[in-house]
Length: 113
Length: 121
Image (cartoon, rainbow over all chains, first blue to last red; front, side, top):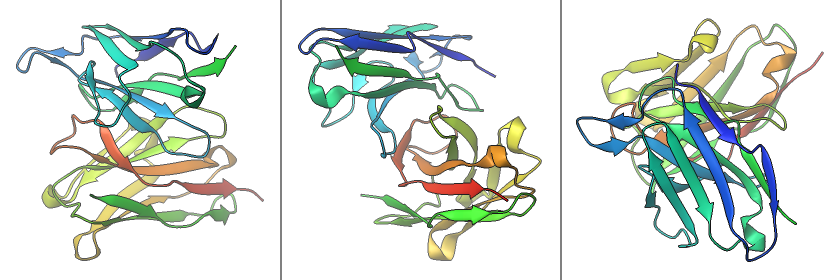
């Protein structure tokens, strides 16, 4: 199974400041036949199911504010919120879809400082 | 736009079983994988398995394959997830979620609203 490890487990950022979440996979998620990284980022707010933010590691989902961006390749990935807003308080998960079982990072809780 | 609607909350005794449904509206489920994801209270997300109805293909995570059965009823556009021999550790929110494209190698979108299963004597 591919193990996904996020860091940090939680972070507190001031409004308008940058938030950075890291995700490391135990195996390469870059598929040679497609040249794509099989990694997605979700946002989950309390009482709601997860919502897709970024797929293929760096493609922003339609309707997602452009302050959210994804980067990285292979085994190391980053989700960046360039200017934190109050509505961004949530838990963020990465998930690999390179192979089953699909596996998630443990989650990173983002709060306002 | 496909929406997934799950059945309501359940309270079960240890050792019993539970069957949760996930019905799609606004589109068909048969060509995509419908996955089940568990979230224990205050915890993260765990993939349990899924089904691709058009191929009658099921895929389970190893930790769930002995106690979980996932089935589909194409006529009603509904997928079911049954857990047997329930124990207290199965208390969780259970989500169904569709794989966006065909096959298993997908991100999950949309998600159902979640079904809370509480196992308590």
